[in-house]
Length: 545
Image (tube, rainbow, N blue to C red):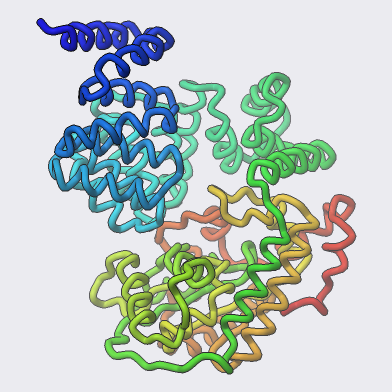
């Protein structure tokens, strides 16, 4: 046996013993001794990668790849190094090379699924994941990642199916229980949602996301056991955002206003710090959008094959977009798309991709149209309309109308104080709506939004339907008829009973949306007036867009 073989055996022995400090010391000598060995460079680079030291592991793996270019596992590990270093182009390049080298490798296929989920190409992500589903059904991380992709396109029923199969196979995991509960909540099955959240908490009492989700389904009364449990936990974990929000909800139910607001304010401050939000970046963004989308600079185009008509329901979060989508998607010809990321992704391309020089390029706009269409859920043939209720699409009304001149645009208007206070009270998943965790930021953002909507209304007044939320709840029959007429939809009785709509609802309004239309929600803020900033209180009816 050669010296190299002996050294490799010893190195692998240290790996099996998980003696990572010794491995790093030993491997440095081996890299001098066997500098041109594929195995030594590959193993050492992989060890650095496993220890989250991608910057040290990457040169070794690149050298190993140079020695043996056909090694798919080396190409794959290089891609993961770039993933850790947040270098997306190189991450994708080496992931594709690994897949080309070994097209049937399950780990590589799953990583492609994760990559496309990360860049919001959700349908592509799902197609990769589903190719490996039968082999990975017992893999916890795989189930969680596929569930995340399914959630993004409103496929909560599929989340339920894969999670139940995972559990049926004898697997137990609190995060899978949590995902299953969210899926049940999205389809309106609150009994099973609570059941699996309670199971998640019993299995992992310190899994605070499950506590927050359970709080949203619980009407707290004095001496509630879950509240007692959380009050004990907060003594030790007093900087956890999810736990603070769960407690805030409980105190709100119990009408202990000071405790409610203290926990909410503390959680929101922590969330803002976590997101590192700066309103000045938003101000620059809004100015740039207004500069780009000026009718004096843009040509109008028409397109063939506009058989599918998108209905964009937009405005600020908490302004009534979910209720409006529920009304419209109760129609037999309309599919509820939910909150779709595609238009926001295209908007970011317009703002930040230096290769895009002009929006007067019809071939570019056709590519945008194709990208948007490819990222829509698959529709039944009888559906001719699809709703997209991503609220912040109000940023991209100009881009929407450039790509889809026949699109319907419904802009929700609600009492500004009610809207801003509701935003401050709402936890938004992921990093979206980062302005929502500070009252001054919300006030500033509201003014940016108001100014931009005035710009859009001046440019496209005949293309935008401004729907007053308070009017909708006070006079639903009258307003729904007008809304359907604007969408060029015939009247169907189900549209007047949106609370009976069985569609999946994945937004913060999922519970309220299953209630009958009611009035008064825009006056709730008055109960908490003492906690609302003077700036937000100054936004009276004159500030309505």
